Figure (cartoon, one colour):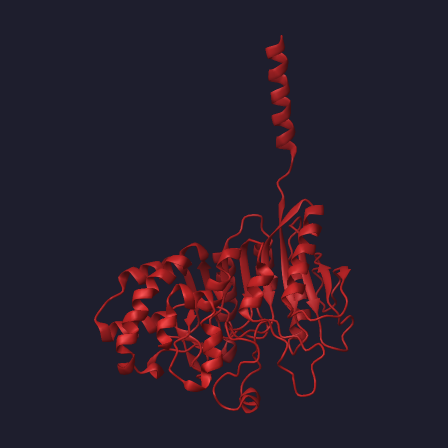
Amino acid sequence: MLLLCALFALLGCQHDAEQIPPRAAATLVYMAADNNLDYYAMLNIRQMERGLPEGAGPLFVLLTRRAGASPAHPHLIKITRNTADDSVVRSPIVHVYRQQNTADAGFLKKVIADVKKLSQSSNAELRRLVLWSHGTGWLPEGAPFNDDDETAKRAAMPPVFSFGLDETGSGNGKEYNREMNIKDLAQALAGNHFEAIVIDACFMGSVEVVYELRNYADYFIASPTEIVAGGFPYEVVTAQLVANALNPFSIAQAFFDHYHALAGALQTAAISVVNTKHLDGLAQAMDNFHADYVTVRESMQISDVLQYDRTGSNYFFGFMDFVNSVSKLTGKDYSRLKEIYSKAVPLYLHTKQVFGVLDLAGSSGLSIYIPNMNTTREELHSFYQKLSWAKDSNAARLFD
C-alpha cells in the first residue's frame, strides 16, 4: 500500500512539472538614437510592431532620442503588435529613466538588469540583445578616422561614430565625445550571457570586437563595414529575433536578402555570423602567424590588403585577405588557421559593393587591425594593446 501511494505521488509530481510552460525568449533592443539616426529609430520600431508575431516572447526597446523629441529622455517600450500602415508608434512605455547618457556602460548594465526582471514577471528569459546605434568597431572614444585633421575628415565622410553615440549635453564644439568604447561595452555586459547579440551598427564585425565580447554570447551577428542607415529590416527579422528557437543564420540571411534585392548604392550589405566558441582557438592560431608577419612586413604593401572602410582609414582590413597576403610572402598556406576561421565565421554574406564604391570581392567576414608603424598613432596603439585580442593573439609583437 505504501509503495502504491509513493508511486501515485511520483506520477503526480511529474504531471505537475509537465504543466509548467517553458519560459519564452525575451529580446532587448538597446537604441542609442540621441543622434542623427533618430528618424530611423522610429521607423525601425514601427517595423517591429508590424513584424511581431502573435504570441511571441516579449520584445523590449530602450530608446533615447534627440533633444526636442517627445519624450527625449531614455524610456523602455514593450512592443505590441500593430499591423496598421502608418507611422504612429502604439507600443506602451513601461519604464521611464531620468535624462542620462545611453553611451554610459553603467546605464546599459542597469537596463539589462531591469529587462531581466520584467521578462521574469512574464515567465520569459532575456536571451537576445540588439545593440543599435552608430559604430566604429574597436576604436576608442573620439578617435579620428585617419591621421588627417579630425574635423575636416568628419565633414568629408558619411556620419559614422563609435558605438552608442549620445549627444546629450554635447556642445562647445564637443559633438563626438559621448561614445562607449569596446572595453566599456564589455564591462556593461559582464555577468550576462545571451544566445545572440545582434549589432545594428557600422564596423562592429571586427575580430577585436567579437573577441572582447566573446564570453557574453553564443553568436554575434554583425557587419565588418557600413550598414545602410535603415538598419536591419525589422519587419522581416523581428519574428526571428523573438522566436523561441533561435536561428542566427536566418537573421543574417534576411538582412542580406533585403539589401541584395535593392538597386544602386542601396544594394549594400555585408553580414557575418560569428560562433564564439571558436574564437579562443583563432587567437591561439594567430600567434605563430603574427610572428611570420613580422619577418615579411617590410616586403608587404599594406595598401594592397582589402579594407572595409571606403575612406581607406587603415583601421579595418580584411582578416583573410591579410592572411593570404602574408601567405604569398612566406610560402605557408596556414591551413589550420583558415580551418578555425571557417568555424568561427560559419556564415558571411555580402553584396558586390558598399554604396557602389567599395568592392567587397575577396572579403571574408571580419575585419582586423594591422599596425602600420605609423608613429602618429602611439596613443591609439597603447589602447589597442590593452584589448583581449591583442594580448591573446600576441599582436603585441607587431609593435616591436
